[in-house]
Every structure is written in structure tokens, then in C-alpha cells.
Image (cartoon, rainbow, N blue to C red):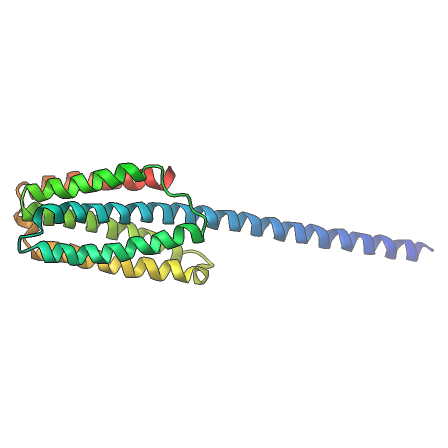
Length: 209
């Protein structure tokens, strides 16, 4: 009789352990899923904002410099930025990400920055391109490092490949700016530092709100 009771207790105890193990595993997965969702929200939100801003910068530059020798170059870079923005417009609903509430601000600010630097001359416009694209490249590199450091990095192939491709193209734009006299812009270092400081503030804000 004692043996039967012990077996009954053991069976019940094992059932409790299995249930506890299941709960622990389920809770761990829920936490992991929540962390992944938060990461996707942050990354896609800020990248969408950045590509929107880049589109508006090139739109502003082209409005001023369309008929100059750098007009076709700016237009070509803008075409690539349109592809970037279209991709993040696709990822926003796919992953149920809320765009930043600052979208209207970046929409106006990007155009003003592009047109403003273009009015300073084509060299200043290219300096703006260098400053912005260098900041975006660094930002994308930070995101790639974060994704690749995850144990489940293989599960994020679409986002990884998207960011890698866009990072490489942004770096090409940076190099184009250098090749087209960005370094000859008036007060190049000051202009570059001011623009990059603004970009970093925009990144910080767009990740969060």
C-alpha cells in the first residue's frame, strides 16, 4: 500500500515538474518574442524615418541643382533612396510597426536641409550627402552588429540582407559626394559636424517616439 502511495505521489510530482518546465519554456519564449518585437519596432521605425529624410534631402537638392552638372547624379542617388523607402514602407505593416510621430518633421526638415545646402553651392550639397550617408552607414553597421550578435540571427535574414544592401548603397553615395568636390565646400568640417549632429538627434528620437 505504501508503495502504491509513493508511486502515486511520484507520478503527481513528475506531472508538476513537467508542467513547471512547460511554463518556464513558454514564459522564456514569450519574453524572447517580446524582445524581438521591440527590436524590430525600433529598427524599422528609425530606418523608415531615415530613408524618408534622405528622400526629402535629395528632393530639395534636385529642386535647386537639377540643371547643373550634378543634377543627374543627385537624381540617380534619389532613385536608389526611393527603393529603400519603398522597402521600409513594406516592412512597416508587415511587422506591425508604428512609424515615428516625427514623420511630418523629417518630411519638412529633410527638404529644407537639401535645398539649403544646395543654395550654398553644389559642393555644399555634396558635403551634406557625405555627412548624412556617413552617419546612416554607421547606424546600419550598428544594427548589423546587433542582429549578428543574436543567437537567432539566422531567423532575421530578410532584415539583415536589407540593411546590408542599403548600407553598401549609402556608402556608395558617400563616395560619390567625395568624388564630386564635397571637401571643397565652404567650412566643410563645420558643415559636416553640424549635419551629423542633427542626424544623430533624429536617429535617437525616431527610435523612441
